[in-house]
Image (cartoon, rainbow, N blue to C red; front, side, top):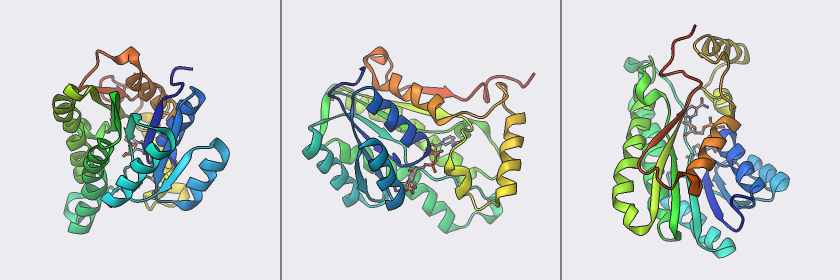
Length: 249
Ligand SMILES: NC(=O)c1ccc[n+]([C@@H]2O[C@H](COP(=O)([O-])OP(=O)(O)OC[C@H]3O[C@@H](n4cnc5c(N)ncnc54)[C@H](OP(=O)(O)O)[C@@H]3O)[C@@H](O)[C@H]2O)c1
């Protein structure tokens, strides 16, 4: 039980990578609190896994303050924060309007900023904060100008926030997932056939021959949350099946 008596708070813990990570922490003895917008998936996660669930939106600071206050009330100070909530909206640059820009930056960048700031009111010393970035922050793929920029911003947070928070005993790192098979692909406005075709195309670009699973990413998050990574500070761990650094043979 690597996280016995530890308190873990996860935004976007009701789906995909966040949900799988929440399950992994719980399996390792942690008290887990999750935060998301969708009441149905929150309730399902609560029922299946016994998490503390709080409904809210990362674009609303009051919701985040309530999330962390309730988590502390229930479990005590927070040892691990996984700031993972995010959206993936892809548009050609010329079609990317102000609403798209605002939505993505509000959730993916400001949402992370406010999550970490809100967490500081209840965080332990020592503690570990993990932020979710993406291979998009280095890959230069089409239609991802805004999404990629949002994740590159988060990548810099891991470094700047580490510098500022290390004196409080807080390590900040980021996890950089490659293409990972989660419900995010069902939220991109594609029909079912196009979603399947998109995933098949992605596989052809994967050196390991498959997309990632949420569990692939969860393993790295638990490592970054654990004492085994005590010497890792302000870093980004890439879990992408070789997507960025290797060629497809
Ligand atoms: N899957 C990939 O290929 C991939 C690759 C690189 C990076 N990522 C990143 O990994 C993270 C998790 O994505 P995923 O693949 O697991 O997708 P997912 O299954 O769609 O999960 C996204 C989570 O974020 C939450 N969320 C989104 N907007 C929110 C908001 N405004 N307020 C509160 N919660 C919000 C969602 O909650 P609701 O359902 O309640 O809205 C959901 O729990 C994201 O940051 C994503 O950008 C994913």
